[in-house]
Image 1 (tube, rainbow, N blue to C red):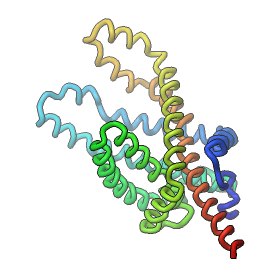
Image 2 (cartoon, helix red, strand yellow):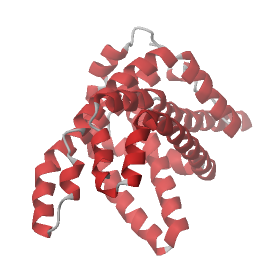
Image 3 (tube, rainbow, N blue to C red):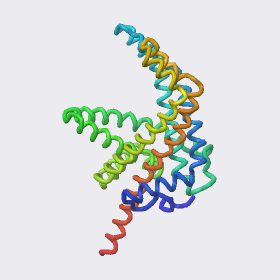
Image 4 (cartoon, rainbow, N blue to C red):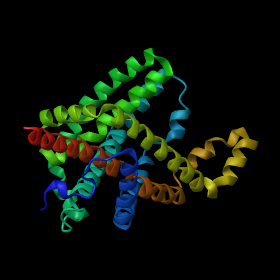
Length: 281
């Protein structure tokens, strides 16, 4: 397999080159990423139908709420684990397929498993740290919460690339993630904020298109509030599941591509700094 610095996303980026690289890589790998993400999205959408939101809305007492929490705890845990597994596979494919075409999605699924358990453990630590960061953000009201959320997102984006490229070590992954995220701190935060805004805009636009076939249900719910529960039933219909999976197929690859850009930018900057230091001597 070629060296990691031969990866097409591996270079020192500016905000413009980062977005250009994201778009060019996305276009080049669109078909394979779309098919892979569509299958993953379809599985996740199907699993989400296990949780009946109508049952939750009908809850009137705390005891009923606790029973429903216990009832849906395992289904929600399964959905979360499957989602993390798909994220791991997609990251591995995006990192290593450009370096070795023999690393297809099936080999990526097998080879990425060695990182999966470590990834889940690190995510537990991240959730704890994120809860603390968001609590501090609440003390500064809206701006503080938004900054804390973007900060946690930035940290999260480095985790899998560091884990997969620099070795399956929890301690090294946490250390390197924090180091790379803070070494180019404000650009990393700014790029992540721009990316999140772009992703939200794309998701909102396509979500509107997905709901077009169900416009009649929306008008019916607005004219007759008693029919509002029918809106939730839409999410269990096969057409909605397929359309939602199509949306996932379009947006899901963007996150790991951007994560790789952030990581490779940090690595390339380290390499350039080391070369400049050697030349100065």
